[in-house]
Amino acid sequence: MEDHLFTNAHILAWLQYFAENTRVDLEKVKLLDITRKNKNLIPTVESHSSVLVFTEAGHPDIFYRMWDAGLGECDVWYNEGSDPTGPILHSKLKDMINRGINASAGMLILNPNARSTYKIGMRNSSFSRGSVHYVGNEIRAVILSKMHLAQGDTVCVISGESIAVESAILACEGTVIAVEYSQGDRTTMEENVRQFGLNNISIIDHVDDETLADLPAPSLAFLVASASMEQELACLLRRNPHMEFLIYTLDFRCAATLPALFERLGIGETEVVQLSVSKLTAKGTFQTEPAPWLISGRS
Image (cartoon, rainbow, N blue to C red; front, side, top):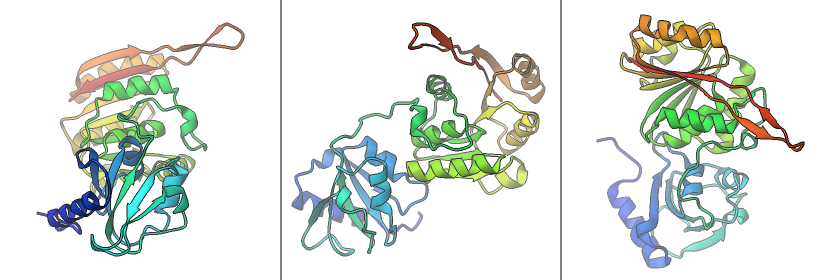
């Protein structure tokens, strides 16, 4: 068993401390140990009314980042020190933005505006502005629905920045490998990672055996079709011969050739879907957005 800063005994002691000093319903408390790898604090607080967070000393901007994400009205219960003893303190998160964490400890965060479930297909205005032209949120909702992500999945997303962000939120116990070839797109991806408080995204600049070697093997890949797509598919299949793929393209000729490419690579159960979204304009007419093809299959 791995060694962790917070053992079961520590966690039980902190639960007992907050049970004795607050009126929180422990049945509704979400436990989150951010000293462990790949744990996302901000999305967890956004979607749970009560989160007991275990953290090590440091994190000088932890409260500022939560406030910047719109969580300023949350209530924070904590104490001074590393042990679940002594007086308990209570503040609004918006009043703690200049504080850091000075000791490994537990803190209870109550979010009165928590969403009970995560809703896929965030508006594009939610993402960092930069070099990226984001796919429409309705199209993204369908893409994520077809990906069928589970909490512990490892997924590779190639040139799909908003897909990578929402995948990291949905696969909160897993890993997202975000492949960004352009420096500008990598910078935008890094800004999104900071903005959403995501710790389970690894950003790489290309796909080959070397860049994937030290990362967990993905079970699913989302790709925006490109000239390097065949090489990317072959490399991913070497990393994991049993994978699912979902490819996005606006090029009909590309979509038409993909079933044959899948067959050549041993990818079966091919499905080709075209999506079309039209929106009513202020002039009372409908404007049709670009209609992509989604090609899926599994090896």
